[in-house]
Length: 482
Image (tube, rainbow, N blue to C red; front, side, top):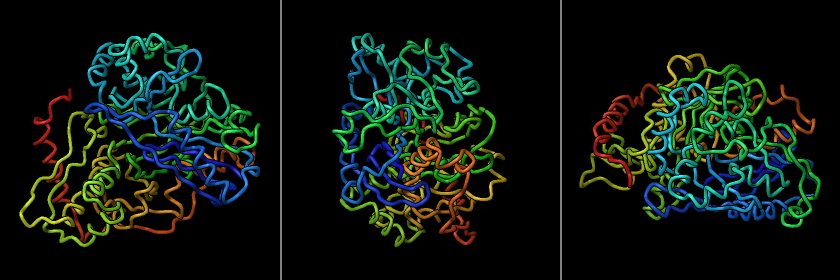
């Protein structure tokens, strides 16, 4: 049995699998703190507490003594800063934090070629600009930094005591030379980062440590279990779908959203904010459009209306399509394709007769439209893909997947257990690292349970044009956040 532990933004998810079938799952919720406008933080210890809680829930279903390997997955880009005693110096600054906008401009000016090195232009979600902000605004903290980890790798540290990361998670920091698949000292030094602070690099299936006696006492896991490096959630989601081979793609509908296409070469496209990153398996790269808001606007509206996310979807299905306002979903700015940390969300076209169902439909359409923008940003690269698989919590909604198929013109396929994607991918990497699967086995694609074909009778092109026009109209009204 292999465990996959995924450190998400809204929850920690743990699955137990034999490498093919899922035998047990558990989740433990997380919260995000925003002490100032544009800030997004979490306490790393909260990830550990949630991980221990999820493992305790798994133990109620099956004994943890049967676990033979562990793989890690997690939200990318978060800055976990440690001192020389490996103690956390401040709350982790997350992927959807926008405070370092000024630092992104300084980094690009200092290193104009950074898009070709790092696979994408600087944006405040990435880790490197966060370090520049800390150096500028919290110099006392910056002076005490001895180590930098990403969220999943902090859980790795708590499990096995080593400082390590994989290349796919490292890719999202801006510090990785994507072509060389190694740390770029040039980018590190240009972003107020000592290269000595960065952890050692591994491929996702490589064993980087064993569960310590201390971690065993806290988690209930047996001491000595091997832990592999794992990957950033985009790459481990790809592993769960067999998207390690060229020409395979998927969409991910978590708190954020991604459109991911695997390849066997490095092809940067920084002008469109399409990320070109190293994969978690050797000899592979991928291109990805990353949308900061994903399915998050659905949860946001649910909170405002005092209902569940499933209720938002149900109301959306009941709405009269001709009476629906237009919604911009940019609650935390947007990355692909706009590279705009300042734009914010809003409804346009509200009437006295607008009801909750119409608001819900507008929000779901906007999520679909972000994927339409992503498909357009790829250009011809995506034209030959036979279909896009779908994973993430949002993939549980057939209505949303059909909207995405209609808006993008792409065939969408959903596998059983699609909401377990990154955790499943992490567990499969553990199985590979311990010899139960080969690297070629990771390319096996699961069977598609449900297909969603573009429906010409439900064409959304006019509403998509209005959506895009609304962004252009509102962009001048979104000044930099303070």
